[in-house]
Image (tube, rainbow, N blue to C red; front, side, top):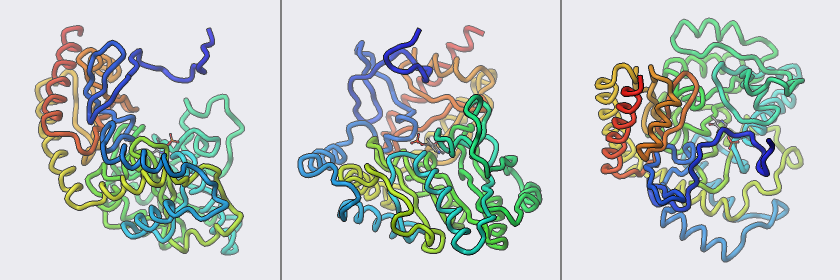
Length: 396
Ligand SMILES: *Cc1c(COP(=O)(O)O)cnc(C)c1O
């Protein structure tokens, strides 16, 4: 039967009424330790005092004016991102999907303006997730997302996920004179916390350079400090031409961005793209605060210290539950447990134990805590994961 809310989600039955740091309180008063952070969105925890102060101050001044006018909060956030990254310029969106749409348009317009309108094909990878618009589902082309929604937007081709140097030859062969760009998540989130090895990212950069292909990174999930660097690609030492950002950058307020080099963005002149809400003062005031906090070196070294602590605990958890878990995946605080038992059974056992985790493809459960999760909460999370694993063992 249809419900007032369109039933497109498989929802867990809990509803939350209050959040504080890494904790959520449900309607029935039960407290849950949150290792999902709204799917990597609440990067600084729930009801972060700095963000609440920034949001309420801006809310009392100005929410929205439209991009008909200069928006100083947007300029401030763009300047901060340009100062901290490879990028020369930034466009603001409200979501990751909208960032994907612009990344696709920007890459095609680049070649069109350089006299190569035939260069329209964007190479993507199996297991990818770039959002749910018609363009973004065509890009990732996973069967469950595209079935029944055809005709799909043409101009995408999915390649095998690059795991070792030998895949480099396949990538080289895939680039033709119609190739526009390569679009990849440095760490796949929905696909099951799969890291592209640094060597493969470097190889991709070389291939793109030698063929004039644009390299686009989707850091919507793995970016904004989650990997232990401000952006995950920084571990590899190479940079993209275009990058999509969203989720963590708003700390819970809807905000996305496309970052680009001056050259890659050269086709996007006045009138070629726009958004009513994108880059509104409220979102950008919050985003600027999030970027200020997360891009601080001391904050990022704390993320790495916490990540090492958590990971060590997870490795012993896997060792003590060999029929439930197989391995720990990921880097920084974008972590996954590859499961032997059914991942959704473990997620559900977690709910019973007062713990929120997020399932992903490849039978993985995702652990995406707030980046400032206290050490005590990490210890408590490990304890509750152990409780959940024991519960699944006892039902086997
Ligand atoms: C979540 C996500 C998106 C889509 O973002 P929305 O804000 O849901 O539109 C795109 N790419 C990646 C890697 C994501 O994790």
